[in-house]
Length: 170
Image (cartoon, rainbow, N blue to C red; front, side):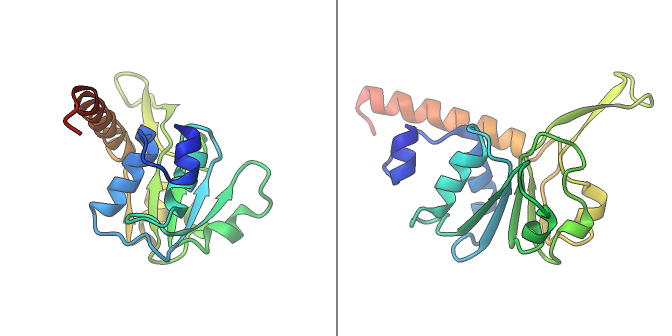
């Protein structure tokens, strides 16, 4: 499937990248012609998402820049993003100074941090400083409750698609 994804051939799409794409599309956020900056180069999210968003297809056709731990002056890149997708796996990776006014921000990160005020002793946060960034962003996904449910939805979508293909319906 990775090879098919790379060349734009129909295949089962990875659940989290597909969920991110659908989150944008189903909220009426135009991707075509936009500058998308992805922070994170994992084989599970960053790389496949970049390949999906550069395809010349509906819900794609973006110019994509990928940043990672080796990127110097990351804020220079993130400030240029019309759509900023953060999948770094580290809390506090992106703050308000790193985001362009009006950008759409998708926070993929899920980080468990200590919080003595919670019964469990911890809480979940993303990779983005939500309060700071939400003041500048035109839209921002929450953590929890943003990309996670879309990942599960796309897993169900792939399961149904697989069953249809197996039975000859699709």
